[in-house]
Amino acid sequence: MQIKIDEIVITNRIRKDPGDLTALMNSMQIYGLLNPIIINKKKELVAGYRRLLSAKKLGWRTIEIKVVDNLNELDKLELEVEENVQRKNLSEEELTEGYIKIEKLRNPGLLKKIWLLIVNFFKKILGR
Image 1 (cartoon, one colour):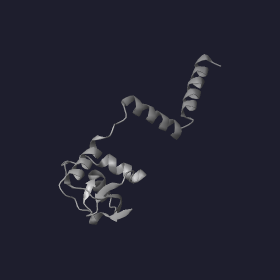
Image 2 (cartoon, helix red, strand yellow):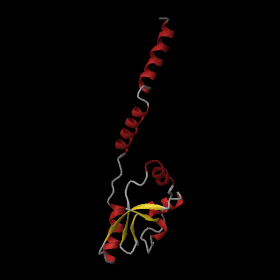
Image 3 (cartoon, one colour):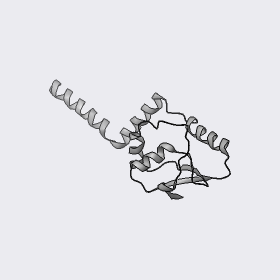
Image 4 (cartoon, one colour):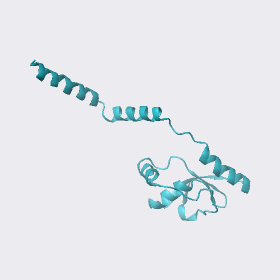
C-alpha cells in the first residue's frame, strides 16, 4: 500500500543521526524500496526513518508502507529498536564472493578474454 510521504508523522526517534544516506538513496534509485516503512494507524512512523528521509531527498511523493495496529508506546519503541538491531551484515568473505559472482554475470567473457590475452602474449614471446 502506498501513502503520500507528506502524510507521515515523525515523532521522537531513537536514531538521532541518520548518517550518510547516499548509498541508500542510490540503492533506492536503482532497485526501488526493498522493504516498506512501518507506520501505525495514526500515520506515525514506527520504523524506516532512513528510508523515509532518502525517499524525501529523492523527491518521491509516495512510499510503500506497512500499517501495524494496536501498538502502545512500548510496542512502538521495541519495534523501532528491533528493526535496527536484527540485521546481520554479510561477512567480508561472503561479500567478496557476491561481488565476484556479480562481475562474472556482468562480464561473462571477461575471464576468457584475459586468458586469450595471456596466451597470445606468450605466443608472441615464444615466436609461435
